[in-house]
Length: 108
Length: 108
DNA sequence: TCGTTAGTTCAAGATATCCGAACTTTAGAA
DNA sequence: TTCTAAAGTTCGGATATCTTGAACTAACGA
Image (tube, rainbow over all chains, first blue to last red; front, side, top):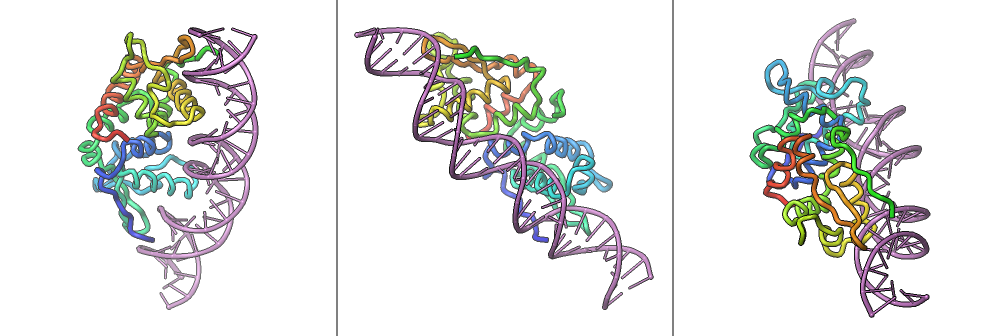
């Protein structure tokens, strides 16, 4: 499995971040990562962060989109891929955006 | 030309609004509508708000997506369709979202 | 009435998304 | 070791969405 690449958020256009957030499954993942930092506060495995019953290929694709938009960071840990929200980086690049999205009344 | 329908923003999911904003052309339109309220402060014609050289069919499609997401409101005025940003409605539904998007360093 | 302007609608080609199936990697058991 | 299982990735084809030229409609002015 190749190492993941994580963009510098300054190179990520706003439209890419909004696109990554414009899907209810990915929104659910981002919310989960924002609320649950995992046992050791280092993130969650894909199958913990993604909704139940989501096909693996689809899940993998969603995580890849979140990664390439700079929203999350992932690393291998045993057989798991552990991801966490790049909250500070995103906040520095797009102040207030995540706050507005994560605090919206609507989860979808 | 049929009258336009504008959704109640409470019926619009967050993902729809983010999707509407996740395209650089539509972001440009929203920015323009936010900055320029037109001669009489009642909005801008499509061809004034959209980027130069955009094919008409494409432009029409983008405006339709912005309308159905509740971001803009349009009405016929002579041969023009005049649109304006539904700033208050969107702010009430998703506080801080438009502010974060419109104030991002990045226009794209 | 005729021409012009502003947008919409239709349809088709180009793109992107979804997900089953096969593959890779890591770990633990026999 | 080898076997087996778990967690993700990659591939490929079906499906859905986006883009845009062409034809159409509505409103205006000459």
